[in-house]
Amino acid sequence: MRAGEVLGRIAYDGDGRRLGRVVDLVVRRDPATGRLVLTDLLVARRWYGRVAGRLIGTEHHPSGPWAIRMAARLINRGTHLFPVHRVRLVPPVPGLPDTGDDT
Image 1 (cartoon, rainbow, N blue to C red):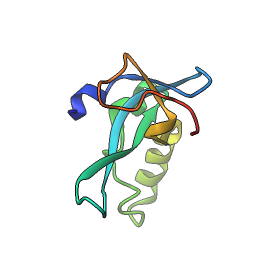
Image 2 (cartoon, one colour):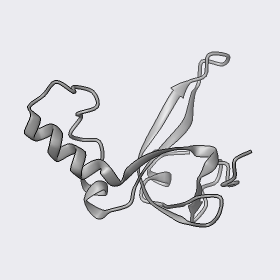
Image 3 (spheres, helix red, strand yellow):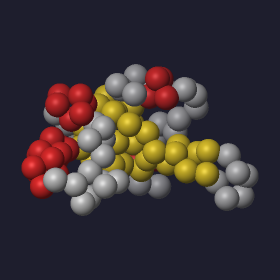
Image 4 (cartoon, rainbow, N blue to C red):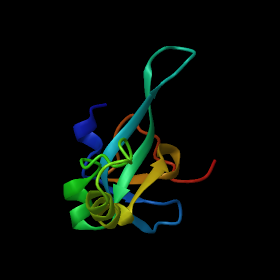
């Protein structure tokens, strides 16, 4: 699976409520196999969250100028991180769990 197959897809929760569009992926290394595994999806509800995403980087450098921190907080307030197993994507992506439930 490629990141481009997931980015921009519409994400829904297990109850069928729309969460927004996927704007970023979080991968982590599996300690047992050493392979990278997709663990979380960053989903934005608003169009400007899709444009900015996490490009401002205030979560990496929280000591920057206050005006930039406040602007980033306003832009990213509709952007949330969801575990990949709790999200259903439309259209579905081959190779990605499509359960959308809490199990």
